[in-house]
Image 1 (cartoon, helix red, strand yellow):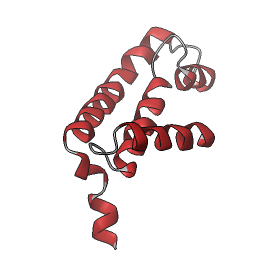
Image 2: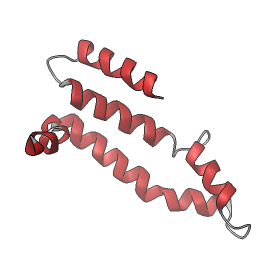
Image 3: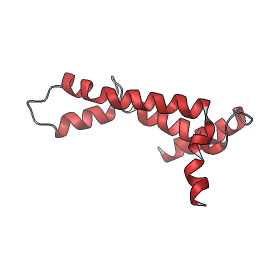
Length: 95
């Protein structure tokens, strides 16, 4: 996973060098990759939840429960895409 993120970060910096900083591009790539882990049919996090949930919890209930997180991830992706300084304001604030 770490290798994939490093590769994507480098490519985003080259492809969209004038639009995104390396940090913004990395944040977008990481958020997209983590969001993909929550989506069916290959939702690794969903299958993990199924494994630890009680037998009374159905897969449909897990899919419904993840919807707010997917929506928030999409909102975050759009916000970082349109306002790249969002990705760097906290590191800049810390120093």
